[in-house]
Length: 135
Image 1 (cartoon, rainbow, N blue to C red):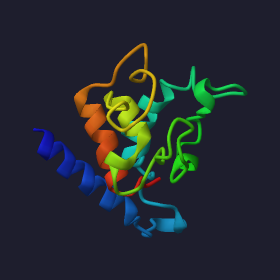
Image 2: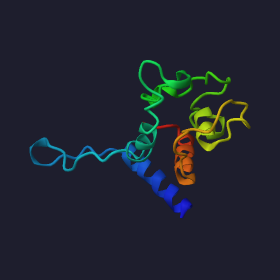
Image 3: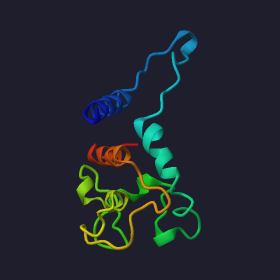
């Protein structure tokens, strides 16, 4: 099932990247633009982290409110990028969520502290990063 899920996710990302320019009568679009897989699946998970990682003084200086702003930015805990497009194993954010931060040379505990992500959600984050962290 996990393989099918990721094939469907990759297909959805591909389809969303190929936006249709067709319009109905009067120049209005035929259908509303569907949310991207990131908006639909990952954004709500990340939103659950904003209680600690947003605002004027985010925990560990990590503000997750603009996730795309973290692409290529080095972690404050080690020299690894928070999000390395195309490689989740070189992305410290993924390691913190997966609980493998110490293997990567990082510090602290697995995140989020109050509710760990499911294996499917962690795999979804990995797939999103591996696909280049698209908007």
